[in-house]
Every structure is written in structure tokens, then in C-alpha cells.
Image (cartoon, rainbow, N blue to C red; front, side, top):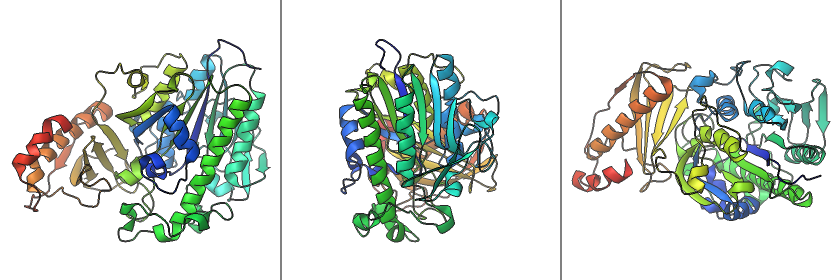
Amino acid sequence: MKTMNRKPNVIVFFTDQQRWDTMEAHGNPLQITPNLDRMARMHTHVYNSFTCQPVCGPARSCLQTGQYATTTGCYTNGIPLADDAKTLAHYFQEDGYNTGYIGKWHLSGVQPHVPEGKRGGYDYWLASELLEFTSDAYDTVLFNDHNDPVKLPGYRVDALTDAAVKYIDTHQDKPFFLFVSYLEPHHQNHIDDYPAPEGYREQYTGKWCPPDLTLEGSSAPQHLGGYFGMVKRLDEAYGRIHDTLKSLHLSDDTIVLFTSDHGNHFKTRNAEYKRSGHESSIRVPTVFTGSSFKGGGQIHELVSLVDLPPTLLDAAGIQVPSTMEGRSILPLINREATDWPKDIFVQISESQNGRAIRTKRWKYGIVAKENTQMPFAETYLESYLYDLEADPYELTNIIESEAHREVIERMRFRMHKRIASIENREVLIEEVPRKKMGQRKAPQQKEYLVSDL
């Protein structure tokens, strides 16, 4: 039963490969996420939310620790989280919480089940290292505390949600921290498809398509209907979690974070679905509900994945450790933040070794001169610059524009600062030749340099 004046419960509703513009709040006209949009209006919507690593395993290491992937050491898939790494589970346990994990882990380096010492310290365990390889849309297999296989009935989203509802119902004796990690809307690897629930794909096939997905090589015509159908079922599951909390009189005393590890560019930026610094890879939907987040409104500052763990601890009244490299967004909600960063930093070390800086207006990216899967590189080449105000879907790369030289120089300076502060390194960034590309004249560009950079 509910106990008055205790710490809030905390739930992380974590999806895999979900673009920010699946939400109506971000311009999607198909009304795929009515529950998420409703909660975003009532509670706190982080409008500009970005992953710091658009790859499954590395992003999960960042969300569990509040550190960048070059700090966790999990800079590519397949690298296990260090045995002595402190995760969110450890911090919540130390404060008297029950902790539970359900779904995809991807941080042990061991398949298919995860040894006890590789579970990030979670008490309750019902998970798989790589859910895409131990399950299918209607064949969900996870592993329990004893590493026994557990087959759950129903569509995979529903199966995990059923397990989450059961956990919530049976862990009310003291505050709990529950992390539910879905596979959807990630593709099913062995068939390279997005298997939505029966009848859902057809509702969205041939409907609205984000402008960037019309680029050459896009798999969107084949996959977008299934992808949107998966997102629809996730939204229904999210609604079920809130219905469960309401029925147990836990809504006001439970924080729920909805977010994703990265987005999906449907093979428009490289030969697969992520691993680039573009909005389609790095921008994700993020909503906080409950407790201090009710009525928080829409937050427009730039927020990184590494900011979410300290936010959860802060909201639960737990001291944020100095080892976390992000910062709590509660000062933003309370309108008390005066020094919030004006940019976010993205690392990529799989498929390419790249870095990106994003401000509210500009996106600047660099790629290693020698493209190896290493945590760091000594020399990078300028790769892209996008004016996100004029070109929000990044259709025109203006990195060679002479008219944008001053913007590029300032963004390069920001990049050097971020790499030095986060990676403790100095790197060489080689410029690309500039061309007169017919953009507006340089004096007009200078009008917004101070405010936007």
C-alpha cells in the first residue's frame, strides 16, 4: 500500500531507435502518440533532447552512469560495462529503493543471458543481453534472476509491459526504481524489418513521411509503416503504465521518464539506421511526469542523455555524484538555471569515428581522418554544417560555404573546447576548402553569430 511522505518511485520507459518527430508535439500529423503528447502537455516536455551516442550499447552505458561513452569505456557495441561502474541502480539502492530491470540490457558482452555480476547491480532481473536475438514480435523470451528462460505471451511490447505492471503492483512496500527497456521500434535484425502488431503497419503505410527520409537510399517506403505501428503500440503501453499508477494511487508519487537511446535515419546517412550526427540519429522524444515534473511545461534548452541520470537522482532527493558528467534539469524546470550549456556534444566510434556539436541553430560535425573503431582519433576532417533554422531536416550541407566561414570557425572552437573538457585531449581538425555557394552575404550572417553561437 501507498505510504505518505516517502520518496517518489521512479520508472524509466526506454525505447530503442525512436525519432523525436514520432510525436505530434514535434510535427507528426498521424496522432501516433496521444498518451505521450498528453503527458507532455500536463507535465514536462524536454523539447530539445539528444543522445550523446547514437549506438545502442554505448547510449545505454551513458544512461546508466551519467557519463560519456569515452568515460564508461563502452564506446562501441559489445564492450561490457565495467564491473565496478556505478549505475543508477546502485545509487537508488543506497537510498533504500527496490530496483528492477526488464527488457534489453546490451551491456554485458555475454549472450544470451546476463551473468549476475554483469547486471549493473539491479535486484530484480527479467532481461536479455540482446532482445532482438532472443525474441521476435510474437515470441518474447527473457531470462530471470537464475538465468532460466522465461517465455512471455503476447506482442513483445505488451509482454514487457505486463511484466512491468506486475512489478509495480508487487513492489509497493518501499520506493522502487524500475527500468523497462523495450526493443521497439528497433528493427528485427534477422529479417531487417519493423514487425508491428497485426493490423498496425497498414494504418501508416504510405502516409506522412519526414522530409529527410526522401533522400536517396532511404528504406522508409518499405519500413515506415511498420515503424510507426511499433511506436503506436509503445504509446499504448506507456498509457497502460500510467493507468496502472493511477489505479494504485501512485501517480503523484511516481516519476516516469520516457526517452530513447537514439533515433533512426532509415539508411539515408549511411548503410544502416543510426551512427551519424544528424538529427534523425541523435534527437529523441523525452518526457518527465509525476512529482516535481507536473506542470513543468516545455523545456527548450538543449538537453543531453547524460543529463537524465542526474535529473532522476535529484528529483528523488539523492545527491548527484561528482562523477556524473551531466547535470540535473530541475533548475530549468524551476526557471532557476543561469548557466545552462548552449550546445550538446555527440560522440560516435562505431562505423565512423566522429564528433558533433549542436547549438539551437547550428550543427557542426567532424569525422576521423582514419576511420577506425577507436574511442579517440588524433586528426579529424570537417564533415558537415547545417543551419537548423533554415534547414531543420539537414538536407543541405554548407560546410564548404565561404559565407559561413565565421560560423564554422566558432563551431570549431566549441568543438575543441568540448573535446578537451570531456575527453581531456587536444585534436587536429582539418578544414575543407571554402566555396562561394550563393548563400546570403556574410554581413547578414554576422547579425546572429553572437546570440546563436
